[in-house]
Structures are given as structure tokens and as C-alpha cells.
Length: 320
Image (cartoon, rainbow, N blue to C red; front, top):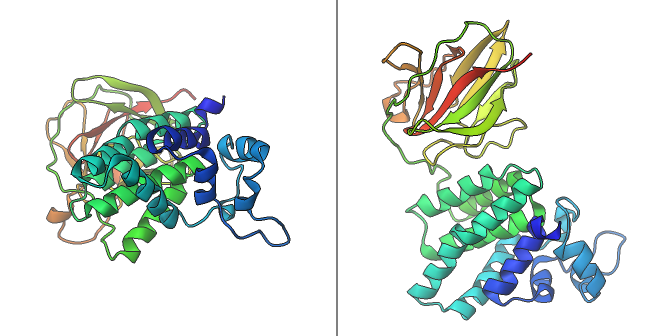
């Protein structure tokens, strides 16, 4: 359905919230340079309404090669200037734009990504980080929020969004580190299961004892599974809270034994074992680490992995 495509969500939002027509939005987003051996340029082709509707506004994820888009930073600045013109450049107008792209627009894009089978957690985690950083000026924050929305609408590619944000931070000499330090607080205790299980998964649990109705299977072997807010590695688990690092934890297996290894996270990881009230530390918070030593820690069924202050996963056995 067109209404579920990220491209459609983006163009519809720009038209409704920014009063930017599909034609004008496409001319902002598409490159004016023709691909090698091709004429005309992507931007000039939007004069064809059929092309604009079918190939651009309702483009399926991956349908348009990234090279056909203009620079997203420049496009975001152009779109933002039109949004400010529409909503006002005063504090109220800027707040309205910020609230929109961190709220309703973000939710609509997330739903569109999920509908296409794309991991939307990375996009949402990026929005959280942009909103949570106090080293960004409001202008920089607005550009980043709009740029993320445009990248996801055009490319539907979380890895590309991460790359563009890192490039923006580097160009503006802003630190990439953006995970606030929190205090570890064990909350839940798990059930007791058998020691060995060749097929394992994680289930997200919350302080009120509710669970996410999703089981995240773990990849075994040396490659393993990365848990982190912005991990784009295939099979990664990104369903985490704001104080979880971009690449927080690696879970691997060897000889039917599973291990958790810290990846230099800001807030560390601990394990709550069934029947024990004392956490087993996998990786202390950065402020408490005496050195960079990494020590894999065995995990078993019934363990609860505690990442940062609020992100919890129950280790479960999966059917063989």
C-alpha cells in the first residue's frame, strides 16, 4: 500500500506540515546531475507527473539508487528554511517543528518502516539521541531531525542514517559519544531453566513485569549478535532505551555455551541470575572501569541481561 511506504509518508508530511508540494520536494531532494551515460538528470525528470508519482513519491525502499539524491544535509537545510517560513522562525515556530519531527512525523515514519520489514528502532534511537544531546544548538538539532526524516523517506536505510549523522557531527566537530551515564539498578529476577540450550533468544522485559511480544533469536558462533542502539550489523537487537550505547554488547556461542561480552559501553552490563540478588558484572560502567580488559561472561536460560539502567532482556530457550 502506498500509504505505508516511507517515501509516501515523507512526501505527504512535507505537503501537509510544510506546504511543500510533491514537485518542489522532489526538486529539493533529487540530484541535478545526470548519471553517467544517462540524460536527463533525476531532478529534471520530475516534470513528468507519472514519473514523479510512481517512481519518486511512491518509491519502494531501495527503488531509487542513493546516488540520484542530492546532498541530504543541504536538502535538510532547504526544507528547514521553508518550514521556518511556514511556521515562523521565532521560538514558537522552532518548537513546533522540533516537536513534530521528534513526535508525530517520527511515529509515522517508524510505522512505515516496520510495514516494509525494516528495523525502525535505529531511526527512533537516533531521534532520541538528537533530542537528548545538550551540546547541539537548536538550529543543529532541527537540521538533524529533518535530515533523518528525509534520509529514511528517501533511502529507508538505517545504516545510511547513522553514517550521515556521524558525518554531520564530524564536520561540525561535535563528539560522536552521546550516551548519558546512568546508574545500574537491578530490578527483576528470572526463572530457573536448564543449563544448556543450543538455540537461544532474548525477550524484552519491563519494570512493571510486562514483556515485549517479540522473541529476538541469537546468532551463535564467533560473529554472534550485537545488542545496541545503532548497530546495523545483520541480526542486531536494537530494541533498547536511551542509555544503551550504539554497540553495547556482543553475544556469542561456542560448544553450546553462550557468552556476553561488553563492547566498551558507557553504562555497562550486568546479569541477574535466577535465585540470586547479586548481579554478575559483564562490563562495569565506563566511569568504573580500571582498564580496557574484555572478559566474556557465560549466560544461561533464565538470566536477565541488564543494559544500562532500564533495558532488560530475559534469556530464553528456543525450539530446536
